[in-house]
Image 1: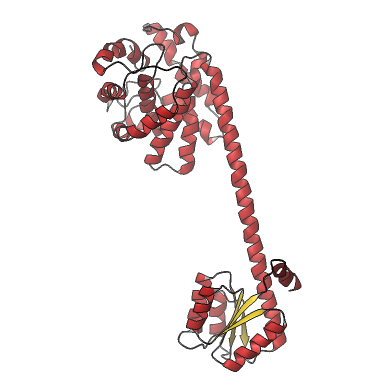
Image 2: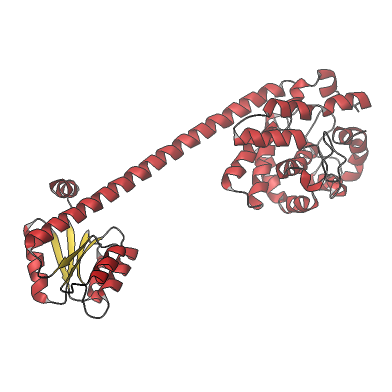
Length: 382
């Protein structure tokens, strides 16, 4: 008990005890004992009085006569433990009933003492109750501190993981015309998409990190094809299509949930809702949802930003171009969600511009021939 009182004294707080008993003499006697032992003591003659005092100032320990007026003592005990779980309770009663004692302990009382209570017995139980309270609070504080440290470490690991991914992706950019901003935007687009779809928080974060790796396999495509400004020949397009398989092979077999998602996106982001995509010809819900999301935002970003094979178009023109792909190229439900998210997509794009400024000067009708002749072959078989 000396350690408990010492711990409280270091905080300049004496153990506070509320004595609840309808007998004035009993209250006075118990308070006298407790005060002499170094406790700060208050009295309450009824359940209502006790509740009012606890609302004003929480007690460390409460002694409770099970026969208090205006409410059942066990009911009072239950309410106290629900509202002030850190308040320890000693039940004092003249009723020698085993069932009542068992129920009191079940409801959270530390001890059950029969009247007339002796001072030594009361003080011993009070000290033990406060020792338990101190241990519980210290354990809770330790757990909270430990959890905070774990969260901080996990965040640091995740930041390092994200930086590593982005730095590795920067290596592939030396062989591709896509900008670092495009890589970042695709992750942010997918993150916003997943949040609206109600994905778990961890999965939302995973897709933000996994989506930028969708074209990692392009590192294995020859420059003559990868950087060709014009339309690819059928043979060249077959080589270009292998970037999905190359990327999937690079990412497969990892125990990381991020890299597992990156693997499914890299493999399936050129699959089409109607089954005409590549490399596996998957249809509909056979295509992982992460890849179906990426397929939409990747085309959106490619259209609205400069690429080696085209200039950027306005957002309205991009949507007009993409609309015929609903239920063919794109998941129709997800495409509808995408349209509703356009303000958020636009915000992400504005906050993460490409290194080089480009003007969106083409209308949909002006750009359609360019889309048919150059862009579309990169998404579909010739």
